[in-house]
Amino acid sequence: VQLQASGGGLAQAGGSLRLSCAPSRIILSVFSSSDMGWYRQTPGNQRELVASVMSGGTTNYSDSVKGRFVISKNNAKKTVYLQMNGLNPEDTAVYYCHFRIMGRDYWGQGTLVTVSS
Image (cartoon, rainbow, N blue to C red; front, side, top):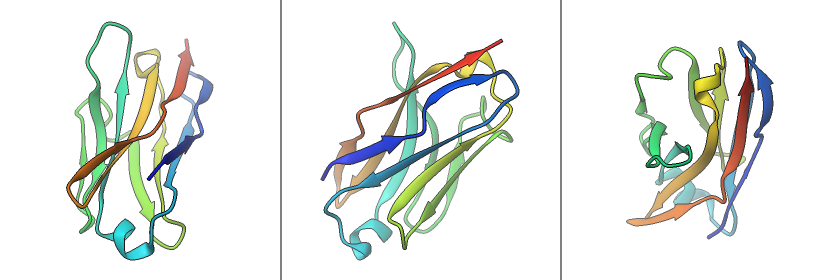
């Protein structure tokens, strides 16, 4: 399984970006039963959870993004999204998508998000 993440780039403070992540070679039933999330990492810091969505649909957000970011998934497209609104420079990081599929962890390659003030 490989995770293809996209959607990063440069945004101005207050702007929006949407990240997407789709696993390759995965059937719908496995996608639907997986837990998914987005993490981010800045230089010198540990990777931190930004948002997650469980197989049953329960979502969880870090306090720093609550009310600004929305995680969602489209089972038909086998894709998970992170809609990021109200961006600020503190959101600048490399964002990684994560899947837990049948007890195994998979990570995307990371996509850089840069927010200018």
